[in-house]
Amino acid sequence: MFTNFSAVQINRLAQPLSEAPLGRSASVAAAAERFERLLAARIGADRAPKAVKSILTAPGFETAEGRLVAEIDACEAAAAPPAAPEQAHEPTTTAEPQSAATAEPIVEAIPAAPSAPRRRRDADIEAKARQGELPPPPDFSAATHARFRAKLAALVELVGKADATGLRAIPINPVSSSPKALARYRDLAVLAIEAREGRA
Image 1: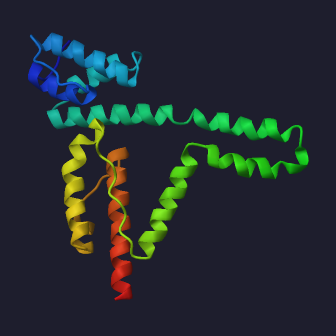
Image 2: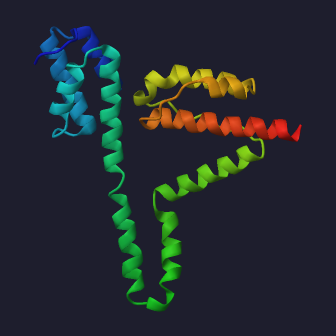
Image 3: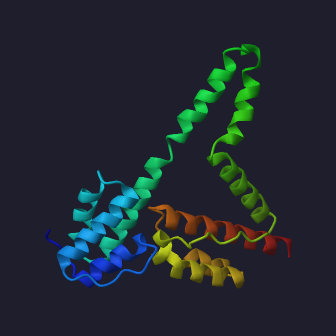
């Protein structure tokens, strides 16, 4: 396979996909083969070959990292929706024998959806931010967030200083899950800091 990267660079791309440290590959071909195998385990064997080609022919290493993160994010996003139809079927089956109480089971079924607790938690954090309570920073311990940890650290430092102006000055392009989480954390922190200043 044609690639713009050395075996060492391909191994750096592959490392976030493996929990164990990766040893050196004997050749570019061996590194590319291992990268494809690890990526296939993460996003599926059907998507991996095309994704690997796109990533390994990127014009630069940062572009390749960005494409890798985008592929993983797209796979995670695609995996999430199937839960919704299952939840939609539950109220329907409940509603058939007891049509008069249709509204009740639907309302009760919503909290069972995976996204409902998250929505409640997000709303709770936002409500607290409006009262001046600083939001908790997002959890970036997963390997896919590795390249955004430095920016998160910068945000956390500015939040600790209650520097709303400095927080607003940090550019964030919310194109995938990591920067979206950063943007939300930054915006909620600004909201909380301004609420405190308003009370003062």
